[in-house]
Length: 63
Image 1: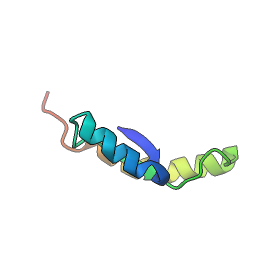
Image 2: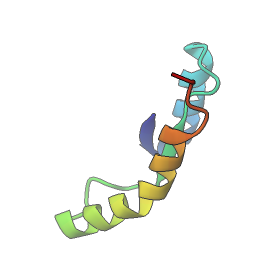
Image 3: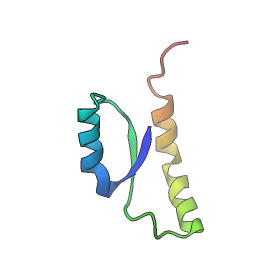
Image 4: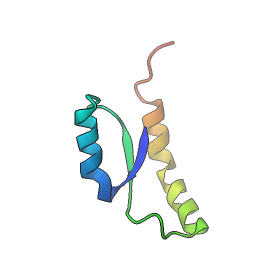
């Protein structure tokens, strides 16, 4: 699972195809990220938690 910015959506989709991993999950966040201060970045990350948890826990193989 990866977290990518919406500016890199096209590149992420291309990498899924060329890597032959069409179901590789990722979470999108708004671009830019690099100019956020610590508080803004923390708030952004907290907003992504539900989707990250969903992707990490869905369709898990049976043990």
